Image 1 (spheres, helix red, strand yellow):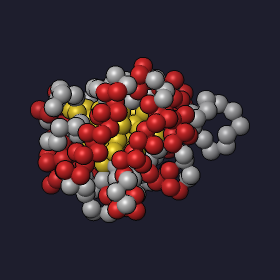
Image 2 (cartoon, rainbow, N blue to C red):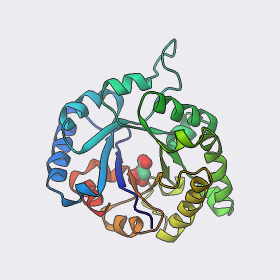
Image 3 (cartoon, rainbow, N blue to C red):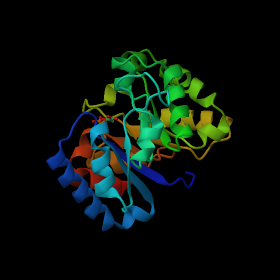
Length: 250
Ligand code: PEP
């Protein structure tokens, strides 16, 4: 295993309200402040757009970064409802998810659009967390590695300099929010294939997160795999103690 710094990133999805967020952010901040693992692992939370300002005030000056769950391909203009990278940077975001499976499936984001969004994030000085992963049908058909390579292709085509500033997240769609986690071996098989693709573009040190029903109980075993460099955490990121225990395993 290379010595790659770990990253545990929460994805709140469309959850939250001001009062509950304040408690969650403050509990994560004080818990992580006391953790000895902060030296080895980066931690962040990707919150809904309206709460970016709240995340910025609550986490400013801490070891916890914050970010958004989507970004526009465009920097400004007549794109009603869209949010640009420059706007996210204005609120101190470090990370932005791009190509989450929920956006690919419910908002018809193609891999080309996802690559454009990754490029827009980099142009704004943000770290795009590019999500890829196969559906249940694609897993069962056995052609899941082809799907992964096809999703990666337009992103890798952005070139080594761009790719070296990204994070990738492997999230099998059948494991997201279902309580079904990929086994450590299933996850590692895909992570190893992604690593080989990164090595081929001379970016071996890019972090590859695993996402899909990660909990405190399974995090350490997943993170012990050679090519798993941390996690993208959905449901479990909404409970401070659970999220902190996952970060502790990172
Ligand atoms: C996610 O939303 O990226 C995710 C992995 O969700 P969950 O942990 O709830 O499966």
